[in-house]
Length: 156
Image (cartoon, rainbow, N blue to C red; front, side):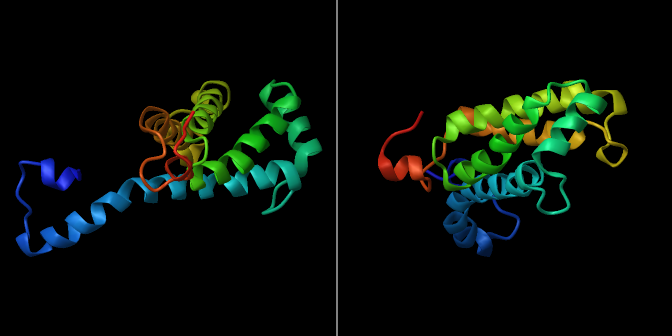
């Protein structure tokens, strides 16, 4: 059942109703795929030094020296972002992967960005908080109809 059909609100432009009714089931997978694929380059920076990143060793040193975090967390963060991002985009083990992303972003908010205030442009917590909440929504909802979880008939 689509949200458009359960909503009591009438569309501002009624002629668009068939289009929105048709496309509304794609809204959730669009967010899931986008969120997953936007995580991948961040993980690639940490793990492989791609996209202007510094690689695992230097990222681990940064985590220790600048953030006061164990260097091993660089590997964990990179794996969650890179491989977890791919899994989230595919909708594979969606709830579990989204839970890991939520945890990673919660640590980023609390340990790294909270002291810089709200706005992301100042290094604040706005961006990682938004990604944490997006991930939490997939912990609660799962991968949905258009996911690998649905295709194999199992989800964690």
